[in-house]
Image 1: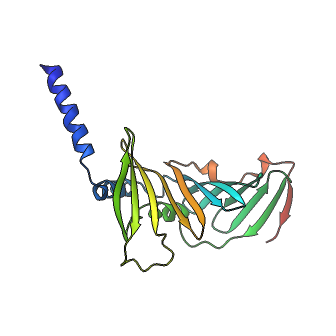
Image 2: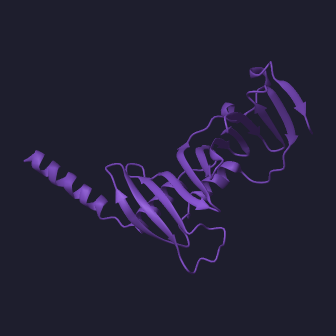
Image 3: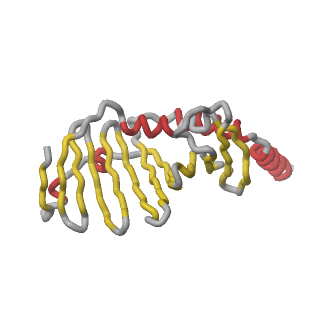
Length: 207
């Protein structure tokens, strides 16, 4: 009898999950995202597919006002660190590090986290399909949304287990942009430039 009740409970939970609307899923995702703050730090990867030129990928680690970006562009690898006042860009192939001044008045991690909440404002959302692990949601721009920078459509994938976004894709000015692999949890070491790790690099100070 206990096994039967367990099976019934499992079916009810599966039915409840299946019955959720796209709006409810997005609202829950926003709620989960809001439970995290800038003190944890955020990791995300952005892919940009540009016609003729190809695909460029950048992974960003943000913690407060510090950020590290690892970019792969046309076979060239660049690593950039930034804090409140300075940026360091390491060209892996040339073994050169350029140092420049940086102006920043906001928290990079907080800005990135906010970017992932309320992302469907000004859009109607509907479930395109779902798998055992994720919902695939189509976001269509409403006529009342007059923001010219907002794409006409976006594709959002949300994890069923965590309600965290798996990816967000859109086409902006013929460029296909996908943000993916969102994770919380960044250490100070991951976003802090350490010159001792690059003893062979030539320093170019442009400050």
